[in-house]
Image (cartoon, rainbow, N blue to C red; front, side):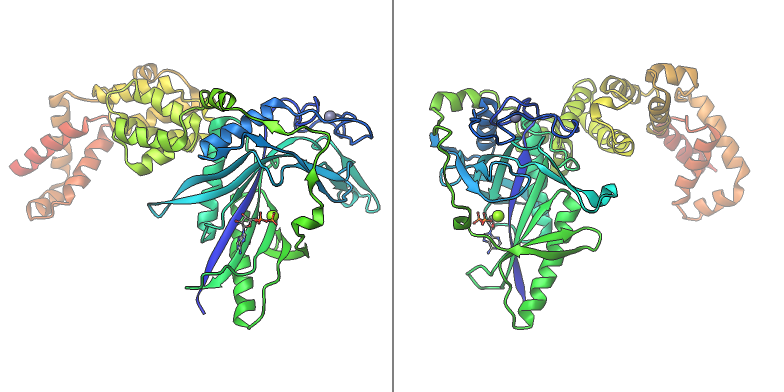
Length: 480
Ligand code: ADP
Ligand code: MG
Ligand code: ZN
């Protein structure tokens, strides 16, 4: 039987606000255990939550960026359950009145745009963290660190519109890009600032109703997300082909084994006994507030991509790569604005600059080759001082030791040879030394032209002007 995969993602994004969502404690990662706590986030009796305005603004930002409607009135609810990392015995979340609903986001699947619906975006507090003693040589102990308790989260719930692990990855990547553009979260996946649950089901191709889903909890890498979905699809397929039924449950992905395993039966909303939190008044967001937030939105990734195509004449692919991060886009635009040919700038940024920052795992802003250095180097290519090949050498030197491209070119004697007689002399020598190849070329093997170019380039240490060399060489060989 052929099946169609159906996936909906629930993404948790930790906000990079200075303080927590309902108290004034800092949100800094890596503090000593329980250092960032107070009576509110410790859940002490009688302590009352106060909503952080900045969290609301960031939720509105993401809502606007995803075309969601912003609720004029929303409400916080208590989601009740017991766990040692949840001292109050309930999590403050939003339930029947979330702040944002009915949004969407565009992904590009094999070159074709596809719109994925966003059901809702709501604000909630994170729970604390349990540290189990096994890893500390204390198998009988567990510790609770409540630094993360009450740290603000946005939960973004997608419609079941995704049809493959690839689409799920593209969706999460796009969402991450938008969150980063907005600056609402640092999206550090290793630290858990962006994590996601995947709901996966199969249905026979052509069937309208969805199949029963399993929910895979808490993945914090694109690779794990894809692997977990792929494993889950195979697991469900085997069950269905056997005539069995998939049970609705919560599963965990084990990255070491590459499999998902059952964690618990699926809980239903009513199990949580949701009810409006009486400690917090309903939240009213008026039109003026929404407009104030709208005015602070930066240019978003899709708009930037389209502008790069229209304004710089880039391909959609290149424009997508360059707009995937705001820092890379800014870097590119600084260079493009300072040179004659923006496409050349795009190639250097996508090639060498991204390679350098990826190899070194550094931020674009920390790239040893600054936009000014790259622009100056491209200028040297454009005014024929150096060839593209020599530029690679200059790039390596800038990466290793810094310095201005002009100085590097002068110091290392890399200026291109544009003196006709010097190139002619080099060509003559190579032609004279290789009579066999000349004969083959004359006999119709025109591919040998490239070989001759290579020889002369080697003899001139790559400094011959390529266009001039080509002309002179052709003319010389025709004459031979
Ligand atoms: P819950 O909070 O119980 O997990 P929701 O109804 O809010 O439940 O759904 C959570 C996610 O599951 C959403 O992203 C939704 O798109 C997705 N989903 C719902 N039904 C299915 C299904 N049959 N197959 C795959 N995903 C589904
Ligand atoms: Mg869920
Ligand atoms: Zn606190």
